[in-house]
Image (tube, rainbow, N blue to C red):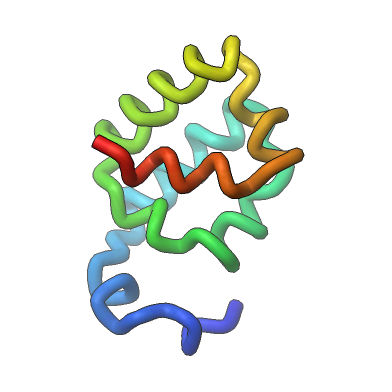
Length: 84
């Protein structure tokens, strides 16, 4: 993992327990690209677990309960996590 591409604030805001909970959540959804998320979208793991799950659920509904597959085809969808 190349930490130099992230601002120090992102790295400071990583809570390992929270990150592991998000990883477990994504694993339960059969997400096969968690490593890519950690490499390229580390800031997703700065969301609190509850906020992440809430945003995930909203986007999953938007994408007809197929968010994991849709993101595997277009990672740009993840930008929607940052929209309130």
